[in-house]
Image 1: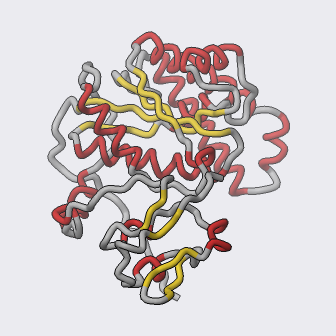
Image 2: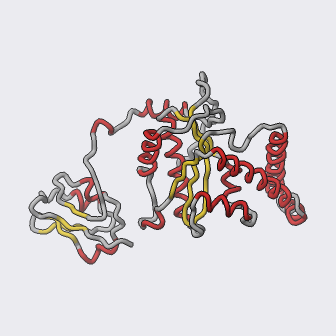
Image 3: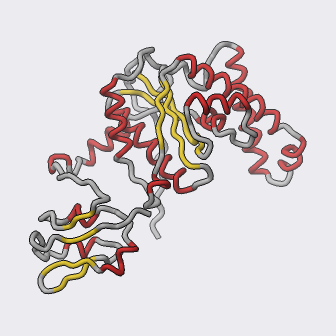
Length: 300
């Protein structure tokens, strides 16, 4: 973990107690009408930034944290506007052929950097994003994903899975549905219908440390925040489940073709692709909201 360098500028401190109230590590104490740092608690600091964010006089200093003032115009976003925005967001599978602009990429980079991250260390928080524009590389990933589906189908139909299905009806139904979906996707491919990457002009790949559940959760949050950010630019996105499974070789050994894709994407051996989604400009305007089932919330 980074060395913690939190201190209080006593000349600025007005002893309002805000840093004391928000600090989860109880680093700050009040003494003689000023806030002080309790040094023995510094080891518990997680660099959450709350102390600097609440201080009205810039008295709290931490060299690990870069902060800036809040624009109050952006606070308290109207709930109905937010709900309307989320209602209109939908998965898009039909795109125009052009790539993202430089400004759109910069905006998405900013959106991703604002995603909350758990773990409190740089290595756990380090999720990386690759925007793929190369038609050749997208075609290569698509082709490999179909190859993966064929191998996965073969494994799901293997003797071991066939026997195991008889022990659990729920698993049996799930495996049967999965095989049916694979068959449908492969049959569409034979008819020149791309139901994996939908002929999207751009793919976004997210990768993180291998076998790291915290990094994986961070990635999931970042992925959805990127999708919301894309919608703010009127760009469409669609999560590519089969492609994500293929690029992480889920349930299968990594092939030479996949290793070559990792090399072309310049992804280190200690990292793994965990998610992929398509992104691009919507080919058409949608006139109706997608029907979605209301979730039930239990109150205990």
